[in-house]
Image (cartoon, rainbow over all chains, first blue to last red; front, side, top):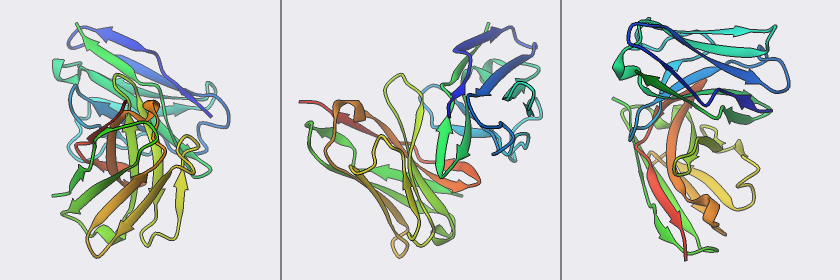
Length: 109
Length: 116
């Protein structure tokens, strides 16, 4: 299966952005979805695990959800800050294979 | 704190081989599944392989199956990736990551360039 994300999103500081991640086949609820943030020149870090869990140290401005009706997961970043400018990747799993989405570049205007 | 440090990257000719290493510290290495993930220049993340705690379970992405071999040495707290029959499209930064439900800690990556 594939995970499809928008190529890019942009918004002003203080606003809210939502990034979608649509699973091409099989239920989005079948396996958990994770979200990773990758700032330029850095390694990825987890911002959401198990669909909606924030690891320690991740601000509560980050939230995750899944929607079975659209077979997609979403990452929402509220109160956007310049430090949130990064690439974001969704990731899931099936049949011993880990799949990443294509990535979304978030630009803070 | 958890630290993962990759090494072994470099320039290699097409058809050549390279062995990457990942030195782990700050946690009980033998308790965790480990994985390799790569990122081609300007591209997204691609999962390559994972290995269970004792090495008895291993899986590969189709793109590297038969060419890459993952292994670990729990006595040395180290993870390895033997890469054979390298192609230009294998050019990427290679990350090792700890697998605990998700990829919860990543190394800084090591660059592999396949070019003549």
